[in-house]
Length: 122
Image 1 (cartoon, helix red, strand yellow):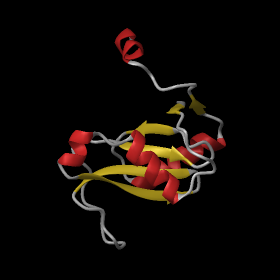
Image 2: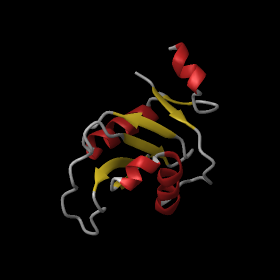
Image 3: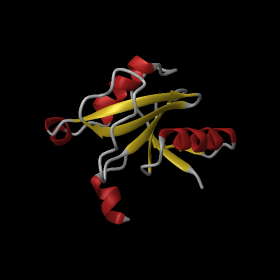
């Protein structure tokens, strides 16, 4: 299995502040923001797991609110700033699998994001 990621305009390497900006710019949909959906970022060696959650992001290490049903989980790569999409697995599992993909050279960063025409052709 390969991980396909899409480029961002982020300055690299990506830190937490930059990851928050990437999530706001590339992973936020106005309808979601209006309905109270936020992003919880969890840092790991290779990047940041971004989980869409309903309600405010907890300030402490308290348990996360449940992910949004049908919502998204993404990873922002520290080295490239690229964004990849993942199933709604726990952040620790995603981080483990992502780091394995990096170690084995199975991260593929596309030249650009897919267009609507690209999606229609699939």
